[in-house]
Image 1 (cartoon, rainbow, N blue to C red):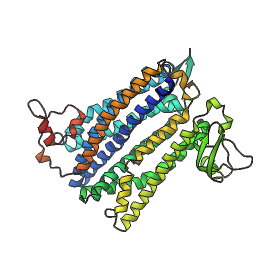
Image 2 (spheres, rainbow, N blue to C red):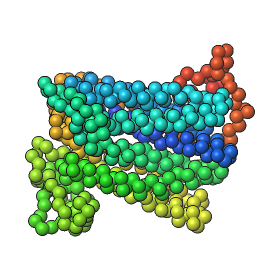
Image 3 (cartoon, rainbow, N blue to C red):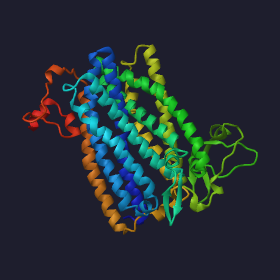
Image 4 (cartoon, rainbow, N blue to C red):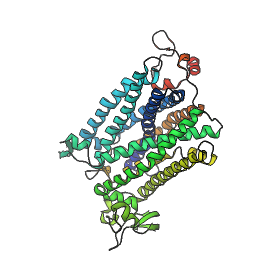
Length: 474
């Protein structure tokens, strides 16, 4: 396929499926917690607006949750089909960690998801709120195990290598490896932030269409408060994460900064823009701010870090990709902070819900959280190259012995199926968003489930069907 090797095709296929998958858990994590907050607010205040918002976002959550589960299954199978070398080498660590996710997060979610989706008129408020909280907790536990596994691949410890394979020695050291706390917090906060941007964009869309209701105003207000608080915190977390990465993966930091060599006695400049050239070993057309790179990375004006020239060529990550993916993530992060500050100005002038330039900005920023997450994962995973387990197993030694033609065929099928299935799912989610929050009256929605009744729910996505859709389908 276009001259790609089997290794390159396997990497493209994994990157494609991973990029699709990460979108859904990110929104699921944030929406589950948002639903728990909405229900808590209703229990404390009794205001109908929180019920209306809960029912509105519950439909969107259910569809997103279903797509996340389906897309996640493909990821697990690829470890065995396309990356058998990795599975043979590190399966004794990554296998149990993924199994722990199933035994904890999936079982917890399975136990309470049905009550959360269909139990509003069937169980008491306390039990329903508990179910929502347990599902939200389950999404965070799931993220914990996934990031423990991925973080171990970034900063492996707690193991021994016997007969060419990893053997676990200390599970606490494996789970709580050096990069795990930073990566877990960074990803979790990113999920909350991208969900807040999604919610704000939905509210802005309705306000721009003159659908100015108390529910729409409330979700814009809540989303913008979340962005105001969380976006600056994420920048601080990112700084701590960067310092940790500098300690354990200095080549990745050098690629992110487009830094090739130190000049004696000079601090490291911050390269805002440029074009890293791997062959010439330089960053062309660099736009620099003197010493700011040292201040950010070492918290001193004259601190220095290793340049890419200090690493063997075969150990250098592709700086062109890492350099720009990192700048996309950071640039969007600053744009989120700016949007939050703009909302504060709008609140003071009582124009938060009426300023069309601000509402357009909130609408256009809706996908920015997901784009930033994708850019962050590209930075993390491509920056780890040429290692799949950093310092222990190279990516070229982890791939299965498939012919390029086979991988090209499956990649093409993945693209077609994913665009159809998940494209349809995303279109349906956007349709639900366009519907807007409506008044929910529990007395008009009597229990209909159980033997002999219509609309017995059997799958998460059935929670997204409204009454008319349900009757039309029966």
